[in-house]
Amino acid sequence: MAITIPDIMLARLDPLANWVRSNSLWPMPFATACCGIELMATGASKHDIARFGAEVMRFSPRQCDLMIVAGRVVMKMLPVLQRIWMQMPEPKWCISMGACASSGGVFDTYAVVQGVDRFIPVDMYVPGCPPRPEQLIQSIIDLQAKIRQTGTLQGTEFGKRTEHKGPLQNADLPADVLTAPGDYTKSQRINLN
Ligand code: SF4
Image (tube, rainbow, N blue to C red; front, top):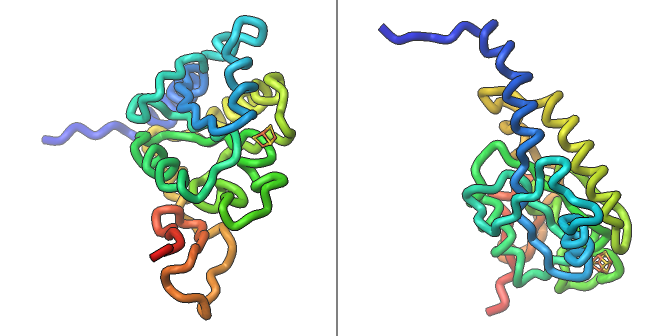
């Protein structure tokens, strides 16, 4: 006979699981430009991100649960970003650090992604060019609060990640042109051939 755990017990375990998750974030640093220097400073002794349990930066996506995109992402790097994101197991979260990661910044060109949230889901945006380490730490604190409020043992909240939130698709565009749907699993790149 299968043993089932009553919903009431799972409900009482949720706050504990969320507290553990929020205080043991493992960042996956995707630092491509100058914001990466501020990210490094956040991990150094003066600001000491370890105070918030988020100092374990190991560049191993399968052990990470917090993607930090620090810097501009060019189109050639986009598949790398997406692959790393897909390799990270759920539950996972994403911080977009700086103007470039969030909106392309001053690089309003065809070669630069105009906001990584067009291709992967972003939980926190850190403004600035570059943001100070204190701002990144504040975003981690805010993310911890979000995890404690929204997390569930079953992970039902992550089903919403594939809802369409990006720019609307233009039906007149050819199929191989760059599109940025909210469903990041269906993102396409420009076919240069
Ligand atoms: S937001 Fe500013 S500091 Fe950060 S990567 Fe862009 S140009 Fe560099």
